[in-house]
Length: 294
Image (tube, rainbow, N blue to C red; front, top):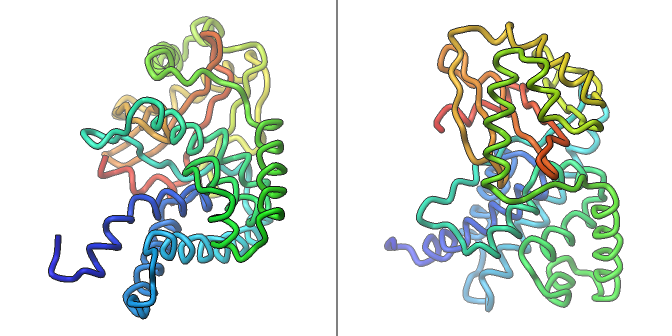
């Protein structure tokens, strides 16, 4: 608690607002900027006329995120290579939600889902995030977006079908994913081609984001043979001075590679039936910088 009631109200809802903004934008820095802008508007608002602070703050945050998303989509055409979201650390510690809520939150913040959300329109993405991630009623979403409820229901249905058709299927059990991540790490770090082939699904794909700033695969790779050979080839380039750190990122285990104490790469896997189905490699330094503190 602080001496300022306006600050207390905003801080009470900050986690929700950041969650909405990140799922909308896929970038931690952009989400934080949007939440800061929302705070500035809240601090200047005539709050005596605000009956529901939560709805008011979500409304501001969602609209700011839609505006920023439209700007980002116009810039995306010049992005070099595949795009991946900026990693979002989801280690809750003592504040962890219960298992059911955590599974829902993890699924809606997963890399697989966020990549698919990039293909939605800004309004579809807003409706999907508010409905699927946070359970807002359709009537409330309609009020937040100044749209009729039938239109919102149509947007929600279209977005849900789009996501379900395109997102890869994967196991969400954290224990199984962690065990497979550790096996993958041993094989990949040692350049063990046979070991990699034993953990990769035949139709595995690899997505690598360097943002045009560092070396990364410029196209999505498919098939166990191509992915294993690529990983075995790049293993020696990591260097013996590199250190590895296991984090929970976007709702699942991930391996952060540090070189000279600075984040170099982040690996995360999707898995199904004990095999790796997707390998995500984030190398864009702009998207890794904030992980140094973790």
